[in-house]
View 1 (tube, rainbow, N blue to C red):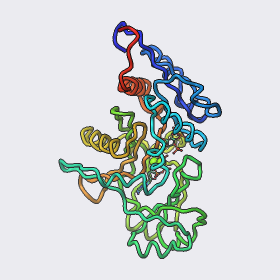
View 2: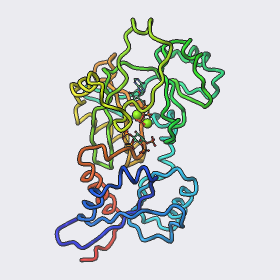
View 3: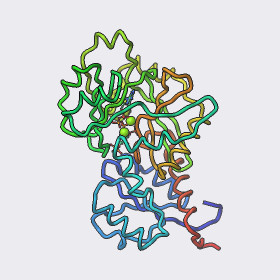
View 4: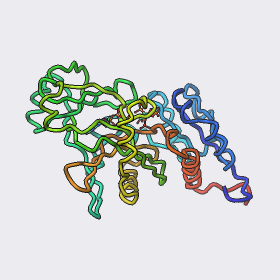
Length: 322
Ligand SMILES: Nc1ncnc2c1ncn2[C@@H]1O[C@H](COP(=O)(O)OP(=O)(O)OP(=O)(O)O)[C@@H](O)[C@H]1O
Ligand SMILES: O=P(O)(O)O[C@H]1[C@H](OP(=O)(O)O)[C@@H](OP(=O)(O)O)[C@@H](O)[C@@H](O)[C@@H]1OP(=O)(O)O
Ligand SMILES: [Mg+2]
Ligand SMILES: [Mg+2]
């Protein structure tokens, strides 16, 4: 907020209680307030139009009624900044469509970006044939096709061989994604508009050819890279994460900026791994809408800067002090 300006902005948030608890912390409310932004909870059960005025609305709600409300509002009040458009968010709710934009990115200077080889399987009965016909190589990770925020959507299996596939009890469509050795650390890149921050997180460990031959058939796991979902007693992995080198920030920024443009989204993070097979090659394995920003160092400043960017970019709003 420029010195002496008395303009105040109203931002409404429509978030699940768990998200309000983790994201709308007093430290964020206070810093935003100091800089001219007042954050208000939106009642998703009451007509949105009756809760105006808002300069901007941020949301992460899978309630179908909420989506209708939002679409109504967008038609009646095109000036209100909605972060982000439901149709753009929808793309991230499917583990095939979420990654499609990655292959369109144009990255140079000795770096390249892609996605692991993967195939979606609608009918579990055709599982073995799908692997054979797609040329996928073991190990593979079996991920629910739908990534809609439920606990189920994070339940995965690392499968070492065909026996492991046969042993799975699959009842929903899923994606078989090739496991790629990447040094046991993932790079989680948080994006809030033009603000980007890359952090390191624990990951599945590399799998040698020898291990492939003697391991169990499959291993189940869930949210292995999410610090809030993991304990910290495995020092070995922590040391590996600490020792890992972040990719150059110019590369990370370029990928994040192009991805933001391609996805037409402002609030997301993506998981990127270094492809141990090819120097300079990185793979995007997951993209998440409105992730756990509060785990980011200085999240209050980053998000407040983003909020100000967003409301100031609105079609001209006459400042009260002019
Ligand atoms: N293709 C892959 N190759 C190697 N490791 C992978 C691959 N896909 C996933 N992983 C590992 O499994 C973890 C979970 O995968 P993914 O991020 O797709 O799941 P998620 O449930 O969407 O996670 P999040 O909590 O980030 O939303 C990754 O953080 C990484 O450690
Ligand atoms: O809240 P958390 O800190 O666990 O944030 C996680 C977030 O949970 P929440 O949005 O329901 O809170 C997850 O959302 P859904 O996919 O389940 O919708 C997903 O975005 C994870 O990637 C986030 O973890 P992070 O990527 O930041 O490590
Ligand atoms: Mg992930
Ligand atoms: Mg995810």
